[in-house]
Length: 245
Image (cartoon, rainbow, N blue to C red; front, side):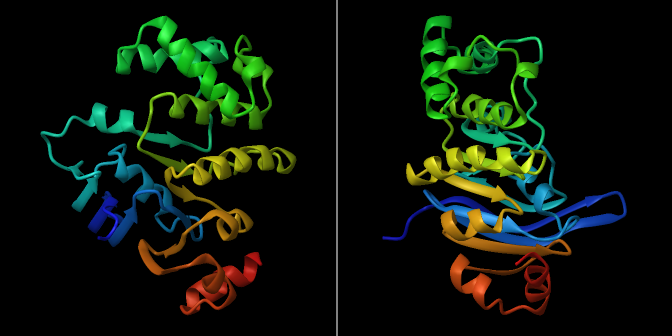
C-alpha cells in the first residue's frame, strides 16, 4: 500500500495583481518525506510554501494537507496552521518575552495547555535544539542561529504533523548555519514531514528524499538529490546548478 500524501497540491495558481507568480504547480509530499525546493529568486518557492498553510490565498487550484482542503472556506485555518509548523527567514520571536515565554504563548492560547504543561513541552523542545540553558534569555541576547533554533523549538512545541522551512538559514552568518541545519537533520531522522525552501545544496543532497527545482512559477524538474544534482535533465536546472556547484 502506498504511503498517503501529507500534502497534495494540484493546479496551483497565484497572482498578485497582474503578476502571475505560480502558474499551475502540482506537488505531492508523502508522510515522513523531506522535500527540498530550490530555484532562483522570484521563482515562486516562498509563495508556494505560504500557500500550503494559507498565509497566502491561492488564485485557483487545490491544496490538501493531511486530507484537509485548506482552500475550502469552511476549513478551520487556525487548526491547520497549529499542526503545520512554519519557520521563516526572520525569526519572528516576541522581543520582550523570554525564550520560555515565546514557546509557551501559542501553546496556551491555541492548544489550551495550562502553564505547567506548556513549560514542560517547551523545555523538552529547547533541549532538542540545544538551548535548554537559555530559557530565561531575551531574544536580542541570542545569536541569529540561536534565535532560529528557538523559532524551530516554538514550532515543534505545537506538536506539528509537518514542518515548512522558508530559507531558514539565509539571514544567518555562515558560521551559524551549521547548528540550524543540524536541528533540521535531527527532525528528518525522526521522520518529520518537511518541505524546505533552501539554497543549502549540501544539506539538500544529504537530507532530502526529493529535490524540486522551480523557475518561472513552475516545477521544472524533481527527483532524488544525488542523480539530479549530478546530471540534471532540464536545461534551466543545469544552468542554475552550474552557478552553485
